[in-house]
Length: 214
Ligand code: BG6
Ligand code: MG
Image 1 (cartoon, helix red, strand yellow):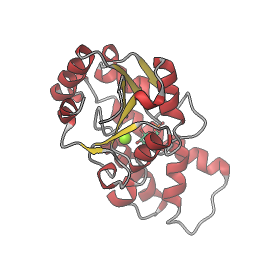
Image 2 (cartoon, rainbow, N blue to C red):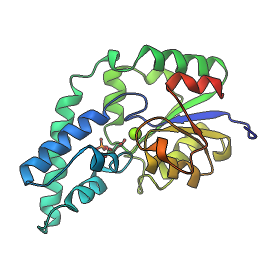
Image 3 (cartoon, rainbow, N blue to C red):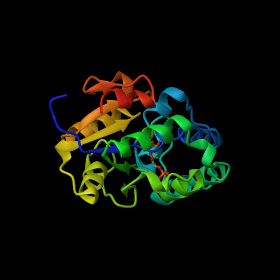
Image 4 (cartoon, rainbow, N blue to C red):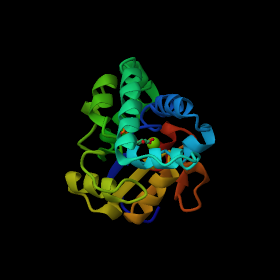
């Protein structure tokens, strides 16, 4: 790699922990209630996308027009169910592999941050007890535009005080890889639909594979 990387910004859902399965369950329950078809493939398009924009993607399959008020009720309902599922999370939900890799990267001198579209980021960080690994967190509460816009990663870089071209991003979402590249950052793809991206820089085999590149 011909650039000097000083910081790594991690996506949360689907990279540091597997909340993506809870997002799916909660959206699926809402879609079933509304009689709208929803499956894992459509769910892949929701990775990295804000709650509001996710609902719009789900409603593409509906012939009904819903008011703004109804849409707000739907996102609130989904989030309430999602938060219930998050209550079951514990420190065990951040794997030993993730913890060991983050610690090693810190020891190698990298600054570490989280860059997530989720407004539940702090709650999840507390549930799985990973705050101590990170120098900064930028999340859905800090931004106007969600991925593929680079805003959340640029906010994370600014919080770290590192220029974007010296940052690497780790993502499971195609929208997240687009956001990283739009922000002039190095993009590592890990699973999800990120692995199929044409513009990713590196495809990781697993989380610890990062150590082979940094
Ligand atoms: C992202 C997830 O991290 O956060 C998306 O990949 C989700 O699927 C988005 O829609 C917003 O999350 P939340 O917790 O604010 O509803
Ligand atoms: Mg993700």
